[in-house]
Image (cartoon, rainbow, N blue to C red; front, side, top):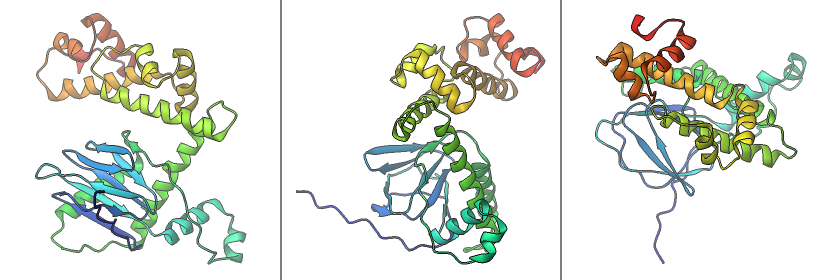
Length: 284
């Protein structure tokens, strides 16, 4: 039988950790936290899952979760925000209770919160805030920069807002049981990540539905219920966003760009681009 190093036990605290060179750590047990990759790639082992964080993506972790960080290339940067159970409960209660309740019981019993643990790829107020903080920490000369309480309050508000949105998306799915809603949400979320990875390929609805292990109609309906738009419209918008960036940052001709992002010809690309941005790609 193999000998495994026991996970390091955490101490709850509200703190920010900026890593300019991420290295391999022993397996550790985390407090409630949010981890954001800034460049290169950070890989965690989380239970039976291998979480590969690309730049701009972030991962939400519950208190007590066991993680292991794998080796990364030199220069890899990441930032982690840790929260105490008390702070999260206080912010959550303040946001959700009326003033009279807060006045009657200003210091209630601490209640644990459970977050939806997932790798999020879409930019959010939380990820944008963490990126801004990381830039400030990188520019600071202090070994231990001062982090005011209001900074953690703001981070907690954005974390809770993102989790509240996830709950709304799950509840919007038309299914009888909560467990079925959660499973369907997991599948369409995975399909959305698949589309983000495959933005430069000519995917069809059947391809993405197959990745979600759902029929095309069931996938289309569930994705629209959860995210408020049709999956292929989401995919097309993603393509156009990447095309816009490439038009501004590369020397590719419009015809070359059309092929690069998965269009068969310039005409169809130009039409799709104009529908999103209101101007032909040649104008950009």
